Length: 190
Image (cartoon, rainbow, N blue to C red; front, side, top):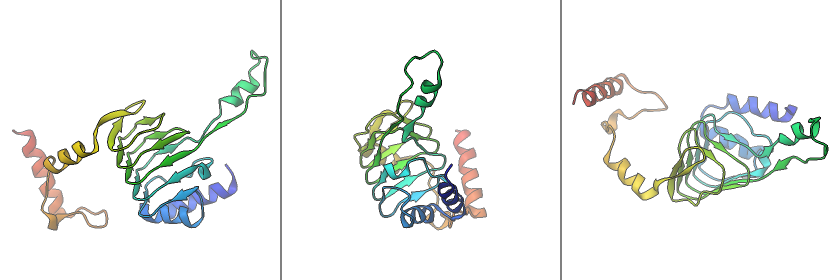
């Protein structure tokens, strides 16, 4: 790992909060482009990060991997069973459009554009362009449902808690903790 990339990776790890990590990356030009209102939970800088463009209002969860290259050429060039030894490294760009959430542990391969208003499920592998306006998941990632359908389900489902108990600065109050555990147990006794 280059010293500069290692230094920035360490500095990103010291940034408190995803918005600050994105701001640090923007300030130091670590990516081709980072738009406004972005948040990075991931704490590492991908190789060839200058080939990654992130537009506005993008949220990237922890352990997301951006793969901008393929190093199989290194194995091919040293394989004694292959006569030709001049394979080049494949590299490519990644572009993430506006209003995208990428779930924890997802992998985004090179030469991929993720369209606007998209949710990529945790642990998914995106191997080709995502048209947008939907929820995608799996390996390889496929469309699960339309974005509007997801929003409708989200507004009508799940445990709701009193707004005054909302988490604050990533801290759950004792009252919210008790409320959530009570709701959790009640949902299982039905």
